Image (cartoon, rainbow, N blue to C red; front, side, top):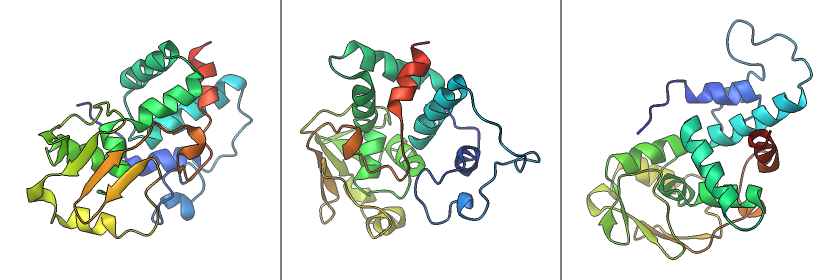
Amino acid sequence: MSKRHSQKYKIDRRMGENIWGRPKSPVNKREYGPGQHGQRRRGKLSDYGVQLRAKQKLKGYYGNISEKQFRRIYDEAVRLKGDTSERLIGLLESRLDTLVYRAKFVPTVFAARQFVNHGHVMVNGRKVNIPSYRCKVGDVIEVRQRSKEMVLVLEAVGLAERDVPDYVEADHSKMSATFSRVPGLTDVPYPVHMEPNLVVEFYSR
């Protein structure tokens, strides 16, 4: 498991957007970037800069995936039939840590990665502790019995700041969820505008 070295909310401030839609994001109070030069006036970005920013925002949203891992996901999206940007989103949303987050078993995508890594999740009745595990349509994701009463889980289920999307069928009474279909870009409830087409352009340079 790769380690995220930067503070997660610095991603918000660097992008200048509340990319997870969380009430406590510092962007809600300080819209400028982090660091001593954060309040400098931002110049106009080049085409490359716009594409890079789109990639950083999408990569950051999914828990700041490592560049190596993100590039591997992109390469697989290229190999699949259909629109590459749509396939990219579908692959990112098929990750186990993403689905744990979507099902509202945890409050953040960072917590989802740790939750899976610590062995609290089962897929089709078997323990899986790999956050990047690729789930298939029809897979059943469950919180392990001994983990269902964790404060983190109980608080996450009650959060009103986001809903479970329609491609995940969640049963919070059993703490289980079924991955019903692979979503496209318009199906994913991003709090901010994502542009995977620019990510494709970035890697196609």
